[in-house]
Image (tube, rainbow, N blue to C red; front, top):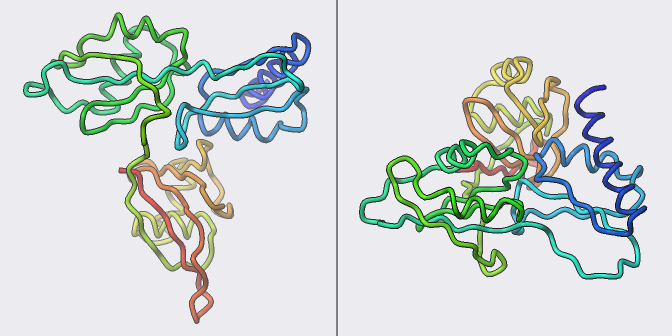
Length: 249
C-alpha cells in the first residue's frame, strides 16, 4: 500500500473512532502534503473535521475529527512555547534549523512539532501538549546559547510568516511559467527543475509542467526557497496574466 493510501486510511480510522466513541480525535501535526490527502478524502469520513496549527497562519496543522452534537467542550492539544535567550547580550542568532535540531536531538518525532516562528526576541515553538513539559525540562541550551522556555497564550500573539511581495507578467498560470517568474530564469530552466523533482506544490512533488497554479498554492523550489502564489491581478492589453507572488524570507 502506498504512503498516500496509508495516510488516507489513518484519517478514515480517526474519523471512525470519533464516530463510534463520540469523542474528538486528533491527528499529529500534518505537512502540506498530508493536509492535501486529508482534504482529498473528505467524502469518506464518518464525522466532520477541522484543522488548526495554533495560530492563523500556521503551515503545519492538526486535524480534529468532531462528532455531531458533541456533549463537551474541546480544544486542540497544542501548546505554544516561547524560547528566549537567558542572556541576550551574549546570545547567538538561532535559526529555525537550530531550534528544530535541538528538539529532534531529544528523540521527538517531527510530527509532534508544529511551526517554529523565529522572532527578534526569540522564537515561538508549537508542539503537541503531551510533550510540552518534556521540552520545558530538557531544552536549556541551543548551540552555545543558554535559553529559557515558557508556555504562552498564542491567541495574544500576532505571528505571521515573513514574506516579500512581487508581481510578474506571464503567459499563463501553468507551473513552469510561474516557477520561471519566481526564480527569474527562463521557462526551459523551470521545466528542468520540475522534471528533476526539485519543485513541490503544497508539499507534494510536482513532475508535470502542465499543473495550473491555484491561489494560495505554496511552491517550494529546491535551491531557491519557498513561495506563495497569491493569485492573479488581471490581464494586460496583450492578454498576458499579471500575478502576485510572495517569497518566504
